[in-house]
Length: 232
Image 1 (cartoon, rainbow, N blue to C red):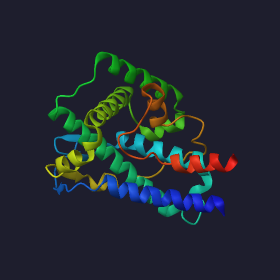
Image 2: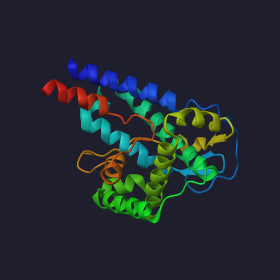
Image 3: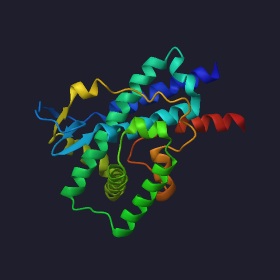
Image 4: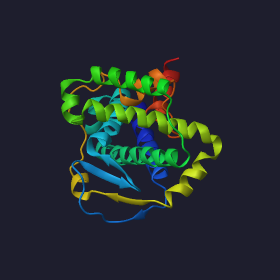
């Protein structure tokens, strides 16, 4: 019963946070001529399916590490599946918007920060299993760029302090937003037996940068805390 309550709490957390993350008043527009694997456009920046899958796999790992691989077979499994698919989209959208803010504010990574991001990428990549590599279908250069983008987004967030969310929401209203529906309809979770053997994206990132927060809540944190408290 306790485990069921935790799953229900996790589902509520993901649904609420996905809603909050996607709360920007963006203008929806229809584009033509998507690039290869181009899933999303926000303003003049793009997100590819492999980039999105990094976020999706990260969330799936967090869920399975907390509740086990069979969580998807439970009564709330399908709703949880759809919730983290939407949450991953919200997280990667937030990242791309923050990169646009970085350009506007002339915020850049130092050489040292880029080197740390590159080290984190190597650590993450070397720990991926063959099945995970096949699911992500991402090359090292793109993955390295994603770690650097995440570091830059975190720098943007940290530079603004408590006023960031207001700035973020206001900035979002100026952007056009479009999703490649045919490609989006192919999105699904990784069908891999055990995802807990290798660390997730944000876990590796936090190992090198101390935190992976972009002003969002990482799935599983509250539940893991509750579980540890119960054990004590």
